[in-house]
Image 1: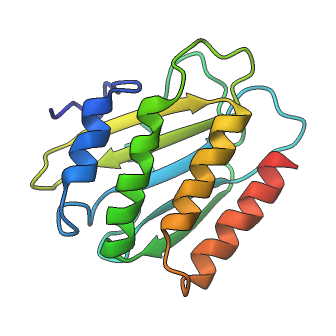
Image 2: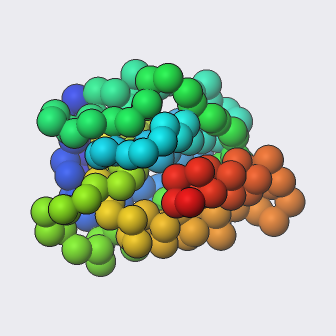
Amino acid sequence: MMNDPTEPAKRDPQILQLLASGTETDLRRLQVEFTCVGTQTKTAPSLAFTTFHHLLQTSWFTALRTSGVHYNGADQVLWNFTITPEEMKRVAAALTRLDSLETQQLQRPHLSLTLALRDSRLGQAGYEAILGRDDAMAVIGDVKDALDHDNASGRRLIAEHQRLVFA
């Protein structure tokens, strides 16, 4: 099921399954972003990545933001890195974990996970999940584990991001 990226389908498992079913070529233009949300005592940078076949387009993320949610410093500092299409395929598979997370209203939202895909055989897809602290830590860990062990820059940026966001 394709959706209009300007109208995000929150926690729509069909989008996660669609992305997980894609080939490495299908996912070359998939973008992933982690951004702190809610009231924070410090500003942490957003962290985004895509494959080396695609130049990151931050406007794809802003179009998916939930109105009324405070995106803490999202437009001020952005850390980014690239990964291989093979890594992106593993990331897409790892993100199907979001299907099993609670969809309850969060008392203290902590992190926005946004996925945006355009110009792909799969069509256009947009997804945002607002996660609590524990779920965010688990999902970021899954993404880090999906990266190649020799992707030092990606692993280092994720680890530093985790340190800043969850300290």
